Amino acid sequence: MTDDPALDTLFLPFRTGALAWPAEDRALFLGARAGAALAEFASPALACEQSFRPQAAALERAGLAVSTRVEGRFPLVLVLPPRQREAARALLARALDQAEPGGTVVASLANTDGARSVEEDLARLAGPVESRSKNRCRVFWAQPSDDTGDPALRAEWAALDAPRPVAGGRFLSRPGLFAWDRIDPGSALLAAHLPSDLKGRGADLGAGFGFLAAEVLERCPEVTALDLYEAEAKALELARRNLEPYAGRAELDFLWHDVAAGLMPGRRYHFIVTNPPFHEGGRADRHDLGRAFIAAAAAALRPKGRLWLVANRHLPYEAALEQAFTMVRRVADDGAYKVIEAAKGAR
Image (cartoon, rainbow, N blue to C red; front, side):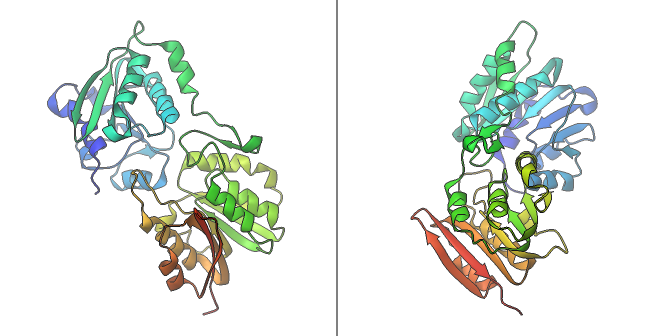
């Protein structure tokens, strides 16, 4: 189990006695992540919310109840806010809305991810806040009442992560997603070089809010089916809405799935497009994620199937591509991103 300082620090007030764990263990955990610190307090009454499939799967393996959205009010609401400011503010507002009267909201964040700013945000919403520091993180909590905080600001911030038009109104997106407010330049470069002869059943790995999938359907009239694989449920729901205009054009399937664990068993594809992620949680490059996407694509492509991939120019994927495919060629390179086509020969 990987080290998670923010998760460990989140439970510091309960270990030291600064806060009491609620009776009957009733608590809500927004942005829940599995880990040894959580195992100390895990119970069937703990409701975990997590929309990112790899982390949701880890919670399930730990025997915890997990959902992409939990409703209701709780005496204790735990929060691991995201780094994106608007998404973090919206999550704090939700936490306060879902705390019972007299309840407690507790949040934790790494110092380098803006912990002090998020603590100040909680104070603006809820009134007086207490905090502690450990593991280069801060844990902070509030016990709001009717005469503390700013209800109008809470309502304003609760709407900050609502879906909104981007790319001139062509797509819906929301804060907290990858490149949420624009078309990612790597994906745009790949779309510009997609051939029009892609056909049959294809897949988009890491589909986001659906930009690449829409471009495939616009440019390739012989595509009959397209599976969108996306680990973030919030992005996948937007992709479903964004691709509604193409519903009669091809068979579409939207899969909440961790591509790094392999694609859906039994599904084989004539082509795959992808802009693989190379970060997960932290800021360091995760080359293994891109290599896992390449391996998953190679395993799921039919003989002579084609992979179209875009990546940051510095990412070292060529060796993995050459090992998995019989043909690899660089189609485009704009100095920041590279587009690569790879194909499987008949074996």
